Length: 363
Ligand code: AMP
Ligand code: MG
Image 1 (spheres, helix red, strand yellow):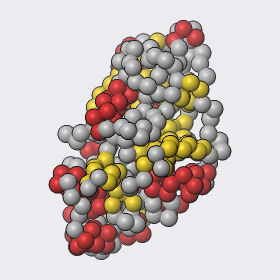
Image 2 (cartoon, helix red, strand yellow):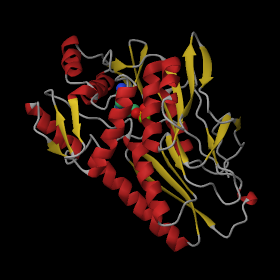
Image 3 (cartoon, protein in one colour):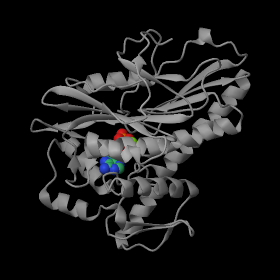
Image 4 (cartoon, protein in one colour):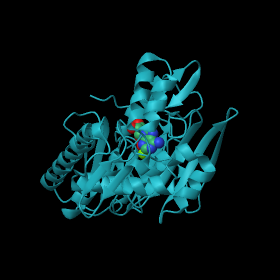
């Protein structure tokens, strides 16, 4: 299974003592999409809660099977096979893939191609570089860049088809699919009347209505740590996704979230070091290589897919252009930390919520 090395995002529950409604709190955790998922919800009884969480996890698994680039039987793998004779004929796609690609193309065009789900061939090269500890050859890079570009992906929403216009194209939804899966899972809980819910998947979170008696869900914000090693980042990720009681994971700030999504993207948990240079798992489509600038972006948006895609895009665009991008999306805001000349600098867009000191302990 894909190793779970997602961005750290510490989640803490608002104090239960403040809540007096008759609903009970339930919590469920599962591995999916190569990371840890966690559902926290308030329900009238255990059966209702368990049934809904089981259905939500089943839907997440279904999306994983459909949208993963790791599985030979996924829709993406079928698309890549069709792209062997590009321009491909129109390929029929599921409602799920159409929804994700529609949002992906919107963010691609708003970010001028910084966010680009056609980076599949370049992601493959990055993974090979990580295995081999060496950068790709110029020829390999040139070939993969030629097979990349969101304008080479044609969507026909009316006919529910896509076409891949250049040979060798391959889609990679790693920067958006998790946020979308959280949206779908939250919608499923809402359909069952369970509005007071929170779902976390790696560095992405979606929140419904707050816990009873509370103003919102308290979400700890991951921080850019200049000296973080791969092992520390991995440990932090595991701890953050499933914080044990009394967890010692240090998070300085938290925000309150309800009926919105928050995604954090950066290179803390997935990077490769080659010849002393650190390359993020986020690819700059302009160079074809992983980003080398240390940056961490947290984005709040109305839905998980948008927050997820924007957080990835802000990494590539950097703080100035990144915040401009975020401000184009209604209800979206962002906080960006960069490491420049050894110093962490932070900036926030208008609309970013007030930050409070993170609770000392996870209940
Ligand atoms: P995230 O952790 O949400 O920022 O997503 C990172 C993942 O998105 C990577 O592991 C790749 O699968 C994919 N990805 C890398 N670079 C890009 C890019 N420029 N645009 C869209 N997705 C990307
Ligand atoms: Mg993302």
